[in-house]
Length: 446
Image 1 (cartoon, helix red, strand yellow):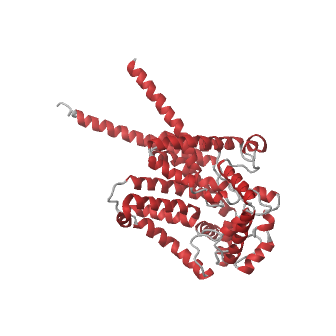
Image 2 (spheres, helix red, strand yellow):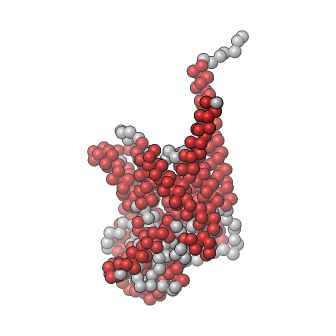
């Protein structure tokens, strides 16, 4: 009997199916290899002598939750009572770790590995994130390689590492939402609504960007369709944040949606002795005098007034100082702008690379280089896809605004650093694609 032969269309279908499957498997293998490399780079060793102390502020708050049953006491100098100095989610996570694993080496190991896994997950999925945003798989692979070569930090006792993963996922989901034609099923907005709620309870500085997303959808869909299709993006975050707001109202008798520390941060960052960054402020002993985390007098004042009134007082002092010292304020803001985009602890990015070397030199060089190159990448992306360029542009333009007015720390940029690396890799990927296309064209004409 003759073997059954497939018609040309069927053969073409199976070839395409096999090619698609091979590409998926190859992509999965590449992401897995990148993830393994990232886990190896961020690996944590078990220190039998390790322990967790009530510092920095998230850990101090976690200790208070664990031992006193109070979300508060974030400062190491004195128990100052209930607090909204921090958003609730990350201290709550640390308190859970303390409850389950104690305060010794196992708890420290869990905290450090959790952050390491989050960082590795971000690096491993950069190719998929890049593909989702239309920048191509290769762009994400190149960005992952640059990230690993730069040996980017992990922050086990701050929320920045976890926020970066959620920001990346939310950005991809929002882009897919924009690409979906109406009618848009409400159920598909539930995952994005949940992630938005988690972000608000983890890092409230994302709120302005998320508000811009809602305004974008309102303009795109119109009021009636917006209400009809996007209710989960409003109701789910509102339901998640509401218990925290109710707690704050019961405890402090005022509405505090996320955090109540703006007055303190502005006052500490804008005064006669303030430096542009926390490390420099600590070096000149300014931070020691004016922040309740190190100043017992300020901690006693906070305890006496209560946290909301203390923050109100600090806010008025900051506004008064800014009004009376506009030049100094602008200088500090300029230095913080530079430090946010070109991280440095000494006030001079060039000196940071060639003299101080606080971080590995290659890290500073790559971060500075990718920052410059990301401008080119954003321009090229805007030419190809305005929506993606606007989405990442909102993160780059709006998210950092508050950090230009408060003391610099290198962790502040971490949640959006992946965007810089992707945008920097994009021009390289575009150039590589054009070179390959040119070579194929030359071979075709030969």
